[in-house]
Image (cartoon, rainbow, N blue to C red; front, side, top):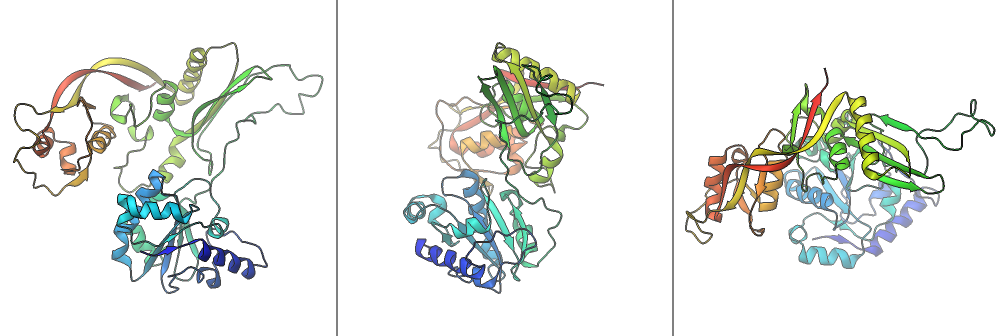
Length: 418
């Protein structure tokens, strides 16, 4: 396991300064990174393409990206190299390598305590992946959603990535209003003492996603509610105080719409990366209200305006629905049963199984009624996610069973208005 410590990173930063007139240059897609810069990285091979994967050892998406790259890299080791780049100190990385299940099997070199590469490829959100071909040209800058065997092969073959979205990180500063009074009509004499506004838009390119938030402007006696680059279903879930993919899932939505794929992203959608989908299907809003309005009154008004903008009707109701109900299989198979599961399916924990099934938008909701969770990794095939009988066969060795029963469930109803 290779690890580049602070000392090596410091040498790299110095080399960058010397190469660019004592300053650290930032690189964008299409730029060529000088060989003298990259050669300061221990283990760098100028004959290979490269991915710089920026992240931390405590960031869940970063670890997902790192784990996938670690699994895929052996297929491309002759043509491709990967470095995980982090600002975390060497001591933190040491603990990660010694204790984390991801770290223990790590083959990818880690550049610890880095500052220079972070200056060369500035960003806010992580993971942050920089794709560089064997000629040192930056081909793409993305998040982790683009990493798979096909894209790694494409980088090794120096394919064209011009149709990919370039990851940019801009922070939405809610201290400044989206809408301002124009100086032509509103001067010192004509400006009203108090006014309110509503702003709704489609995707704001490069702006970091923000959940629904409320800013209290005490000086002007206003409450400012805003969200940035969120899918429609997630916006409404947040307004109703539901936690997306924690206690509320795509399976909890009933839609009467022409194009269900517009409302939330489905990881199983073929041939479309999430950032590309988001460019067409995420939205922003910022609305101001007098502080005298309660939170419930503000929410009601926001929903009315969003309904008008999207031309839909949305309602949250608690109704009885058929569900997949997960319980212990007390009568048939106990956990210590000799029943075997010889399937070669994916290894998933109970939490992952429950979450992944509920993320299928046209699936019956899955309800977990076990007294406690389990970290046992179970072999479950993808086909079983849609077939309750097959799922029960694969759950039997773990003492679990799924029954199709009715349960009361909070459900979001979305209907498009003709």
